[in-house]
Length: 280
Image (cartoon, rainbow, N blue to C red; front, side):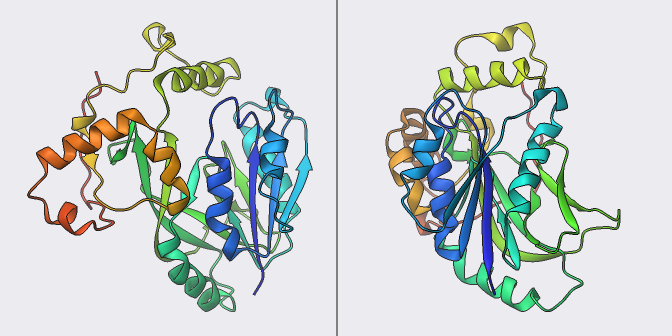
């Protein structure tokens, strides 16, 4: 069984994407890793090359923003075409896998390899927000998604590259890995988050209200979101340690939830209920 990892990257340094951690989180599982680098305004290529692994294969393309959101799926599919494995494991540049899930991922891929009915492998998601110790499960934040697909030429990324579909229009059939995907795109210093949001509007991905165009993004009261009591992927330890807002929030959680058994045990737990959150 051969496994290809793949991703896309553009301005990863400028916008502080944890792409090194993302790639390194699944590199031990992969036989090769394809990185499609866009025309960046920073040292994204040098950053990727710093991994110094023979598994890394870099391709480069110019992003055509006249495609709108579809530029992301278009570039993702270019990276996918360069994959040669039986399975293609896709991570966006702010998505990371926990090393504790390696065994179950290997087993799910191995068990599903000869079952041609299985098109993809599904993850449960942690969308962290503002703090590495808060995650969102309210409306608009999907909680399950496919990130490993059968590399048979019949599956492709679509839209803004958040998911995959079959080219023949049939439903994608997924096996549940019961593994977690850690999404860190919304855990940034407030100034960088504001810059990322304004950049997204500039290229047509979002439309911001006037109050959302400030130089510092306001996460609001993090206490309105669910606390996370478990461990994070080992590759993220340095980033988490120096993130001031997270460290403050961690202390608050320890005080407010001193009694919670999941905090005491440090379990990688995710509540199964949806919670309505009022966003001011």
